[in-house]
Amino acid sequence: MSQIEEFLTATKAAFADGSLVKIKLGAYHGTEADLKTIDIKKIVVKREDKFSFTFHYKTRDIIKNLIQPEAIGHLRTALAEEFRTAVLETTTFDLAFERQGDKLRLKRTDASRAEPSTDHDRTKNRMIAPTGKPYLHDLKITDDKGSVLNASQDKYRQINKMVEIFAPLIQAIPADRQARIVDMGSGKGYLTFALYDYLTSIVQRDVEIVGVEFRPDMVKLCNEIAQKSGFSNLHFEQGAIENYDSSGANVVIALHACDTATDDAIHKGIAAGADLIAVAPCCHKQIRRQIESHKARNNLDFLLQHGVFMERQAEMVTDGLRSLILEEAGYKTKVFEFISDAHTPKNVLIVAEKSRKSDAERAVIRDKITATKAYFGIDYHHLERLQGL
Image (cartoon, rainbow, N blue to C red):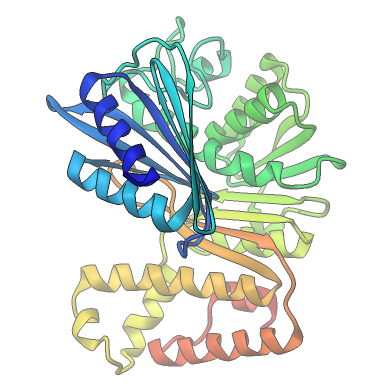
């Protein structure tokens, strides 16, 4: 029996007798962009035993629950072609797999662990625990005992997911200098407070966070909560995004800033030379109006005659152009869903990290922007005008 099949046989036996704790796949060298590791465990979903795969990417996690034949097939391919290391942890032993070229090695060591829970609906560990966080109560996320309110469950999940995404990106900024983070259109400050709390108390990173919000009552409330919480380097300022002086900011965040306010936030980040710009766009009216009024004839005519498709197309074109304009300004961009659309329909996140672009590369990007506008009948993109392109 080959080492791979021996590993799989041990996995199936541990799965069957309930001794499987977890499997960890590492040293990925496949073709899927930004995939780092995979964690595998046993869960019970609707009284059916399944393998739960958590795919860890650079900025997000994806979970897939598979029945045994699918899981074993996926694991066999992963061991043979995609991952160089794997560790099977059980209640009584560990089995380590290593592949170096054509050489395969297995090493078994004794262990002693408690039998793991397989309850799929058990309470999850969160980046921000609900207890011992007075600001969560002040923001009406939890009650006075630290239990998440029923009406705030979705918001609490969103907060944790966004901290899970943003914290590693911010930690990638060299630790020899303070991270100055500006949250444009911070609203009630849900993310602002949670991110500050996590970075200062858990990561113990030196940060300053400023929330920029137009509504004076929100600014007053958030500053009172920050002071009450002892968050000395967190404060909120009243004003419009377009008028804010972003000088010195090395991280700019904007979540659901309406329509072109997202472009204002991106422009402020570019102007500041920020290391990281991350925005979750909201409505996309500026581009949709142009597409609808000009009615450019192209291969997508059959789609754009339907309002629901027009809405989705306007969103994709708007955010696609934002990504191109960021790349022209010297950023590496990624666009992905940051939370399930069951919690919010506006679930796309654009992440831009400072990079370098040659003059030739920037010229190619400008040509692509011009061609895209012509194809969809767009006169201009608001961010394009702000950038003077």
